[in-house]
Image (cartoon, rainbow over all chains, first blue to last red; front, side, top):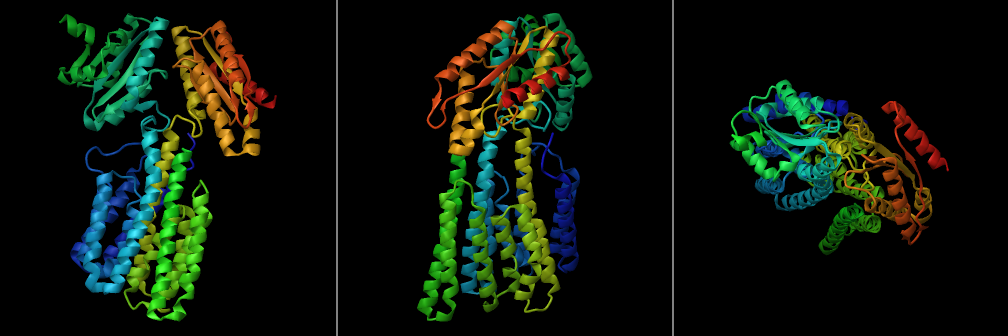
Amino acid sequence: MQTKYKVGLLRGNLLLAALLLATLALATTALTEALLLWLAATWLAITALLLAFNHRRPATVPWQLLPGLLLAALLWLEPGQHITWLWAWAVLVMLPQPRWLLLLEALLAVTTWWPLRDLLGLEQWALTGLLLAALMLLGLSRALDLRALRQQTLQRARLVPGLPLWPGTRLSRDLAVERARSHRQGVHAELLLLHTPRHRCWTLAHRLCRLTHRFEPCYRLDATTLAVILTSRGRREAEARRQALWHHLEIRGPGRATALPDLVSLDNERQALARQAAGLQTSGEAVDA
Amino acid sequence: MPERRIRFSRGFAAWYAGGALLLLGMALWLYLMGDYSRIPLPAALFLLMLVATLLSATREEPSRLAAYLALICGYLLIAVELPLQSGLPALWVGLPPVLTLLLLPLGPAMLLNLALTPVWLSLLGNGELDRPMLLSYLTLVIVAALVPWEQVRQHALLRATDPRDPECPAVERDTLHERLLSEAERASLLEQPLAVLLVHLPQLEMAGEQFGAQARQALLNGFCQAVDRCCREHDILGREGPGDFWLVLPDTTESGALLVQQRLDQVVAQTTLVETGQMQVRRRLCRPRLGESWQRFEQRLQAVSQSLADG
């Protein structure tokens, strides 16, 4: 996998930033600000250590919220000393982030700029506001470019560079293609859905990709569900492979296999998986029981 | 994709135009206030910003020159006006590095910011070294650079994970080889035939050189559409080189592949583009030989592809 992007340099920059923030924290006298700066420094240092090159994102609260809140807190507490940071709002809106967060950041920027009126005097205060608004617009226009590219690409991009692990949005189309193909070839294809614990999802996804054949694509449907389309020569071989896979993956949650010709819809299968008890079931057996 | 670029560039053009208007407003304000000696700077910078606006409005790509012009305007204005303002130097010292980061790509922006450190500090600190200000300036420069870094990371990540070629709907090279390998594995495991149709577009280079990027794009689009019309959904069209395409045909026998080739010839013969005329392709069919290893087959494909390109 060739990338021009240099992880080492980014890691260095993160560590240097953490170091400088720590120095700044040592130089301040007020306790709360020092705590805030230490928090920021620690966060950056931890980020530097955990840096990974994949589309892994936290599920509920976006991390972009943290720098925004830190910046706002710093400017509210001691505007006189940290006023240089006011311009950082313009850079912060460049981050790829959800729309509501952009609005929140704009709001926070206004609330940190508004109290500066006494400090700056009316004329400079107005000028600062105008310049900040202009710079934030510029930052936003740079963010929009990446945002459009992301929206187009994330639907079809693999989740980890070099690994055949795909987003769930691709699965329904691939299922239709694979169903027609396996029918014409006369081979047995089945959809295997696996419920995994949240914290083990990524490791299991990696293992799943390693254990299956190269031509069998794996999907991550959500934070707890993985899917794979297994192709074998016949029903008996499929059964053996499924059992071996289940054994090697060591999943204790529910798992569900459905032969592609019997598949009604993906949503049905996911609902059935959610209702199902732990252990591997095939949909044919479930009907018999 | 081109549409997106144009919209992006228009956003910048509007921003430059806004800056130009602000400078004009400033010049008028100074005129009304009777401060005639300060008028030439904003007036001259207004003209510069106008040039930047026109540059970025007429180009599809965001213009680097326009960004530098805007940056020069910003720098000059800050350098000349700031010492006059009696306000907080700590506030204004943060403005130039942020402007640089917003207008330039990460590398040049960082170089410029670090190189200009003494300039801004001496301008605002009246020639004396202000230690806290130096620290906060450097911290701002380093910490703010993390945001463009994240953008670079996201770009690289998208490029590394996107299976599609950036210019056309074909699959990009690394993914093509991976898919070919996986299809070869599937074919040998399930005992199915496999064929690969190698195609070279001889007009592509010439189209780019003589008629520009748009003609080149039209040729690429026309070819991909032609292939799309004569192959099945699970056939894989991949781009091996700029003008070299591999059409991987899983579970296809020799006669089936010949049929696809014939259909492609027909569709291509019917395709005529405005600038380049009738589309031409050179193509050859390749199938794995009995007992041939996958690496040998791939090498053979590359050699044949090269010989097609050489004519």
